Image (cartoon, rainbow, N blue to C red; front, side, top):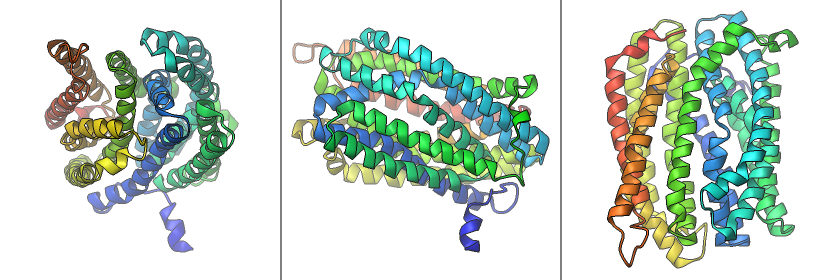
Length: 458
């Protein structure tokens, strides 16, 4: 029992072997991220097998709009994680308590705004994207249900981010696994048994995310040895709420710009027809799993850097950055190899259409080497964010997306138009993404080595 309890204790990353602390913190988060990815994947598998390929395309086409309209939550989550980890590392209980309380209130305000704005904007955005008439109604109803029930998703992301900032990645994992199992069960009940189609998938996700958010909140109320969660701390204080927004805003802006770029690219994707849209959905679902080690190590490096910067241990930050990045690259290489080897079987989970399976496998092959490059980007960006430098990763993301990916995608499509390919070669979507990943890794490494991030601690 004591051994089990130890796994759920907050991890102090300012002491001990850096790589061991990083790996110990990352593993449960990696499992959790994989479980979270199962939300979208199970949705796609269920609708693809029980409703059809068009329903699969509908769920995927809604993704870029969903990502665009939840940027406020991304910003609050990032800002909260940075401040919590630094105050935890500096052992400042009062500042930590006020920060957590303010984040809960800021999230409530953001939820109300997104519920209203998203409900009004979802349909116009789908029409702007030239979403095929055969799937637009499904897309709209799917998005509407998700946004009406957005509080669960918002609070899970913010509260689990706070838990990770405190060094507790195991609790977030446990609660996410519970909600993932619930999501799968509800998907099968609503879609396979009750025939609710795309709406059933959205409703299952909303209910499961609300459960995970509630469990995170209950866990935080029990961590009284680290901070206080009293009603008085929920009142917004200018210093803390402004700092959360200041630190999180660049990540929110990055997410917004990336989402808008995805919307622009989605418009190009839609021009290739329903078959390619469905293939793109399948690739992006598998891509989500391939990216999991990178995102997990990136988040771990943010917490690691935040705690050690709070304790003013800069040499330890750099040592951990080197070790963590190497481990992340190795993990990504192994996982990517497995995806390439078993690619056809993986694609076959989503659809029984042979042409769709083969097209998806070919597109996935284009991206393969990029995942190792993204291990560098995510790990070193995590270090910079943890230190309080959220601007540099933002500018790199904007540059690689707006200046590199979008022009390359449309450029290749334009140059490869022919009678056989009136809209251009479909490969342009994934070649452009690979180019942006490779250049992003080089830029991130260069800015990290410059060391300006060391001047940003709060």
